[in-house]
Length: 231
Image (cartoon, rainbow, N blue to C red; front, side, top):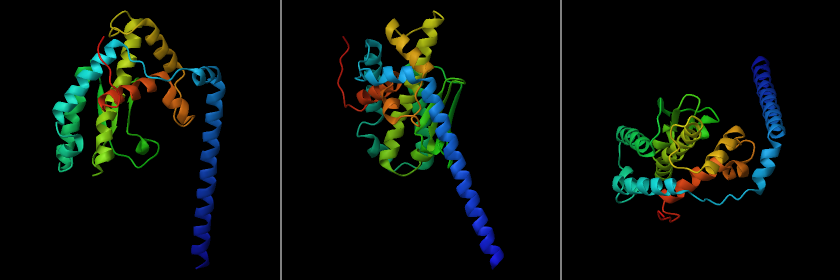
């Protein structure tokens, strides 16, 4: 009995020490990041975070919104609530390809992942520029929760907006394709990518930074929360 208690005590102490070590490492990384990007973060705090889409994005957002209204004429919840897991998976795979074509970006990999490990398990999805890969949290799609399923629809467009931002920055740099964005808009995105603020550093600045403010703003048009017209 004593041996069992000792084993449990040792395991508990080991867990606490490991947790403390990981937290110390987290705060060290966070402090180092803030020190390296302090000037940009100070600029960001003073920056206007209001969403001001340029003409190419208004045009694109309205096209994507029309696509969603055709895919879900009675609403996302109404179409998906009785779908099987296989039907949901097929629907989302189709939407990724449709959205990719509409947003005119290239992907080398599309990954519908499930993970119990943080931070990936907490993400709706993410785009990785280094290997041009799109990652969507399939656990949320298959959760059976209408609100999460609906949010994953918009996550596809949010993350592909990041792919388009990157493509515009590199297209301008290589004199290939910039989608018609202004030089100033592309400069702002490029600078932000050089000083990207992870949500673990600051939730407020994460959402306020230009590339995220743009992607979240793009979502609001698709959701019908904002109205813009092509000028």
